[in-house]
Image 1 (cartoon, rainbow, N blue to C red):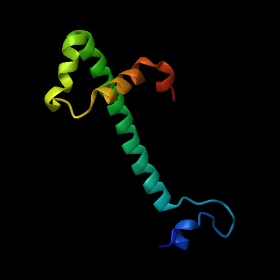
Image 2 (tube, helix red, strand yellow):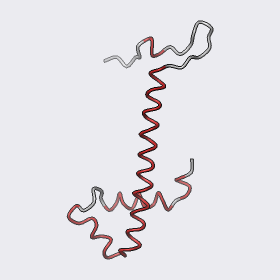
Image 3 (cartoon, rainbow, N blue to C red):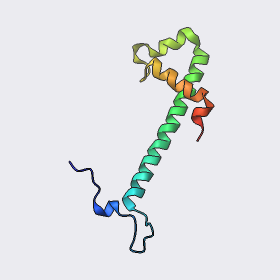
Image 4 (tube, rainbow, N blue to C red):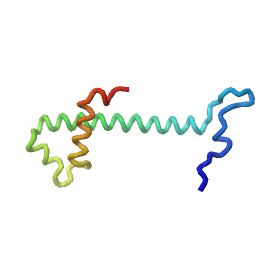
Length: 93
């Protein structure tokens, strides 16, 4: 199985040597960046909601969220998401 790009996707320069926009590269960049932005926003929003839930529910009731698969994530992942929103250095661009 070849991993080489077709010649038309691999070429980004014209006869003058100036780089030209590659439609395929531009399209994939746009798609990936859009999904990445939504994913990052979802991670931050989920982390914020988890921080708020733990503060409101308290330690004893917090654990009940993870019983009977109430959430689609485990307690360890929830703690990791909470850590992200509590760490400003992780949210910097």
